[in-house]
Length: 222
Image (tube, rainbow, N blue to C red; front, side, top):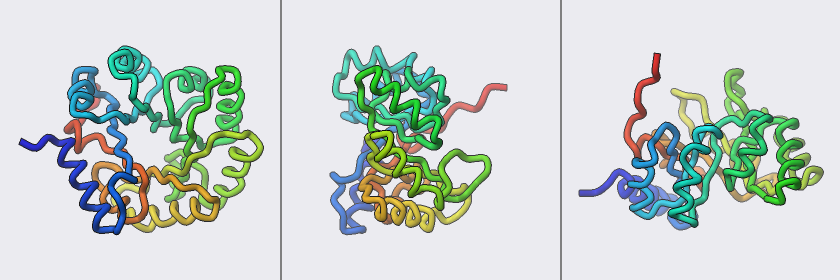
């Protein structure tokens, strides 16, 4: 019986092939937010090593013990980061995908130096210009990327986005790719369980997939 993880990996392979790309050039970030250590261990045992978490505190409760058993894990922060959690995030994560404001970028630069640890950063772009979502506005992206990369010397690997729900995501994925291209950035974190194949067709180098791997999340507590 094919596991959910195997199905997602096959879909990534097929989407890459259809786009004339190599599947090995696309990283699957298994989104393990709200999932127990046992559920994560099941996915680890199938060979998956790159995971994404939304909250620093939740990650702190699960991942140190899991890392002791698997020293080749790569952990991505894919949720919003409060400035007062920056030090803990740098200690826990290998990649921060949600750099979205100057105050946070400066805190990452300062604390990374203090901790003597370089974390890969992605700039989050608010491609839909939605008031309720974090991210730099597309028209402000170039200046912010320059600040992060040139002045603050952050290790900026690429860009990340979350398109508006209920809309065709492709124009937003294409917009992200255009911003990355003109700034010489090669990595694009875009696409989730419902649209990761479309994201691959538009150039995603990593996709953030949770529900399609782990199943539906439990209902929110009252």
